Image 1 (spheres, rainbow, N blue to C red):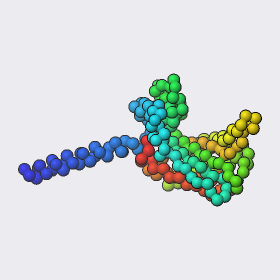
Image 2 (image 1 turned 90 degrees about the vertical axis):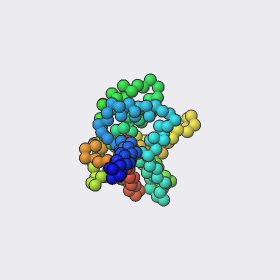
Image 3 (image 1 turned 60 degrees about the horizontal axis):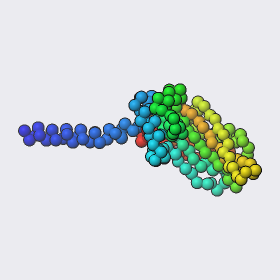
Image 4 (image 1 turned 90 degrees about the horizontal axis):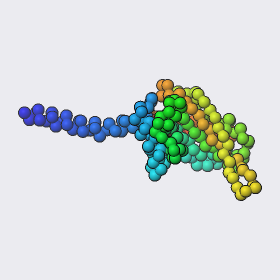
Length: 206
């Protein structure tokens, strides 16, 4: 009887431990997203007070180098985070149904945004600078991008002074095929600078 009671206690403790860890496993990135997951992400994006905190693990910042351009930020977005971001950008008149439709149109990709800023040692080389920035996603082996776009970043001064180009944002998409729920590395190289590395643990991101 004592042995049976001990087995029962062990079984209860094991179940409790698994129950404690299951929510963490549920947080790992997944795709395709269920209707419930899209709805949850939509409401996180509408939560103005907490959306920045939720998205903070998806962004890494870097200091100004001694020379060359500054890779200031590398941001990685899973399908779930993309729903949150789009929802946050449409805080008025945007519904959960629209979020679901936008997700279906967008499809499942990993999106990477890189912000590169000019420095005193690397002045503005022109509006097409973003085309010269190389962005690679690595998980065991490098993955090729499925789509690349970019845009200059302008600093606007006083009226009449015009705008000054201070850097560029580069937007890169990668296929989710073969991407596992563990660490991935993003390598960024801009002309005149060293390669900058950012590691994201997909097992701890939605």
